[in-house]
Image (cartoon, rainbow, N blue to C red):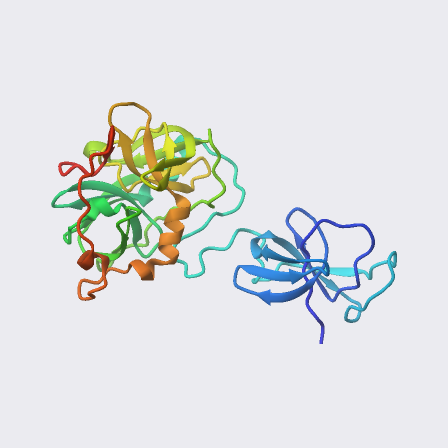
Amino acid sequence: MLMRYWVLALMLGGAWPAMSEVIQLRDKATGSGKILAEKKEQVVVDIDYTVLTITKNQVAKILLDDASPPTSRARGTKAAPVKRLPPTPSAPAAAAPENEDELFQGSRGVAADKSVRDLVNQLGEAVVQVRTPGGLGSGFILNEEGYLITNFHVIEGETQISIEVYHTKGGQLDRRVYKQVRIVAMNKFQDLSLLKIDDRDVPKFARVPLAEADSLAQGERVFAIGSPLGLERTVTEGIVSTKTRLIQGELYLQTTAQINPGNSGGPLFNLCGEVVGVTNMKLVFGEGLGFAIPVEAVRYFLKHRDAFAYDNDNPSTPYRYLEPPSRLKRPALDETNAASSR
């Protein structure tokens, strides 16, 4: 039985042992090693002198060796010829894998920047308004089934929630209101909530992808879409001022993109069309000082949503045992959760 091997590093000095199966990385690097463990998104490989963990989205091609199973051979021996095969489903080359439970779409790999105008037309349908009896906020849809993210403070203490979506039909926008909205999970401390549209006969929703945690750089251009002061589908553009603004023990993205009450829960996009943050507050006495929850916190919340599950009949649900957050007197800070316009 042939033993599987994995390509994982730049070609080092000397020849590689003959292999029964080889995988080539996207950057055309080649190498070999024995697979110790294989997961859905990662592979652990022994390359003799160390053990490495490789993500499967780095794989470009699979090479099949026509020779017999690998055996040790002297340095300098010529490697056996290989036969190129197309990528297998377990190692797609076209795009990075989505989250394993498909609740959200991850980064689609390296993509060229687009103009804000093009991206707004492409992504605007997935940005929604979140209405409650107490106010208005924003949100964005994660998948076709109608799961969406908004801020905790937008729906804090509320059970009657409606979602306004602008569907595109024949080049025109068709505004629809969905009133069967379920709270799936919430995290008071990071100001995040996961909702689900449960109306009958709903279409498949447009969605937006989440960027990788390390894909954003200081000074990079970003833009926000939301409903500041109830002005729906408003677009503001700016840059990332810093990725590590510490406020009361939590790290936030600071941006010059204008953020106002009503933007809360809306997405902050990079120029690849990926969500890099969730807007949630601004500096009151100043301009161009907005803040967003980083995408890594959003990913963590979604992947561990069972720990934050909402259930009014469960005594452990956050809604039951956590007191509503008080309106903290932050120096010169205003969380965009004013009762009049969330």
